[in-house]
Image 1 (spheres, rainbow, N blue to C red):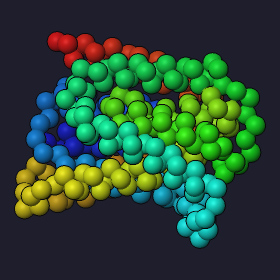
Image 2 (image 1 turned 90 degrees about the vertical axis):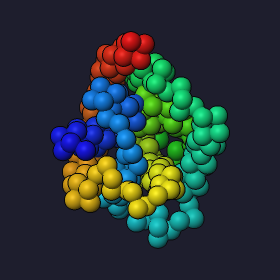
Image 3 (image 1 turned 60 degrees about the horizontal axis):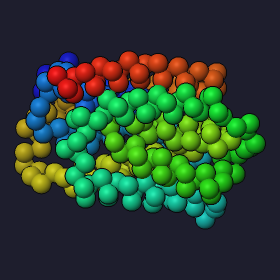
Length: 259
């Protein structure tokens, strides 16, 4: 793989995994634009691992508290949301929706834009003080919304945070719940990509071990920056600004899909 193509893919994954713009949608779009083809399963593994490590580092204190005291409401709510999402993920695989994403991911960008606009237009007044106080009802809603984010173009972070804002949750706490929820989801994606590798003797056919290490480190650093930007945008109530970008990129993706 060309080194600069690798840099672009790492930037896309690192930035768009946590910004509300859909990393899978952007990877699909730029792979089409750049004409990148071939077995990228190994690269996806390192990209997933890098973003997972970024979340763990940023939220290490909360994660450590959950590990020390796992039997608490927050843990149960994260599990409920994850299980609901897994139902959608398995449905996605069973019906082979992958064959349709090339035509619909542009429209999915637009759906994310609508969610971001709606979150700030119709956001309920916050009554939540702590992330652990997010209701079980909100957890179920987030699990459903996150389930639709298996579709490239629908942002996982954007849709889950928007859903929590619409449920009346505080921006900071909504972000914390969403990013904590990303840990089992990203870990699940990592395991799924690992299972898909059926021939480990050929895993370095598209990318060298050294480039894999570079991809991990670079994506990890970009992911940390992405997380910080997202939290700052939420705090300053500018999260919905990304909707304008999503409309533009959605139009580009739709145009490319039908050319």
